[in-house]
Length: 125
Image 1 (cartoon, one colour):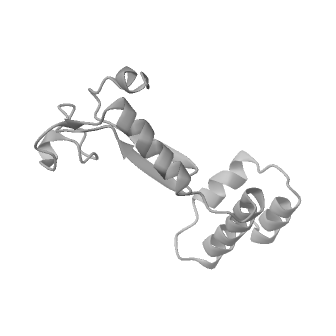
Image 2 (tube, rainbow, N blue to C red):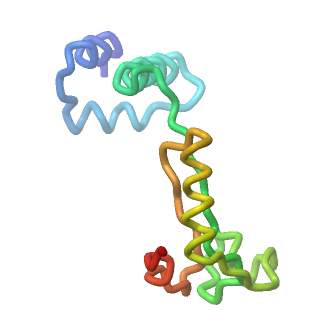
Image 3 (cartoon, rainbow, N blue to C red):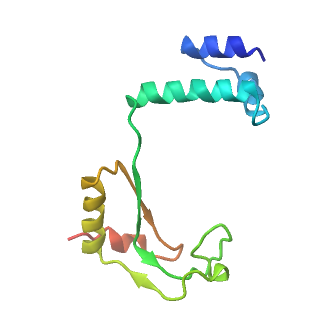
């Protein structure tokens, strides 16, 4: 992989081959090549987004120990973080989402346990 050719191809909006993508993904962290590709990625991202950041918000519609026990998740019973169960009403969820939007969020993620009936939150007033 020739780094100069990769950057030239990127600047010309050309498609990368599978081999080129594989080679870029195989680069070791903390190398000049990796940093150059990261800088080019940042340039593209800033161009596409008009140099505006995304502001994400998370809205927990229920907080409870989850019996699915996914070890990556703080809701997992085994992680012992949540001991009681609370659920936000549809009206409160809608209100909180509106506040997030007013505060500048352009992406709102609903967080819930795996056993939560997501359909219940869709019944907004």
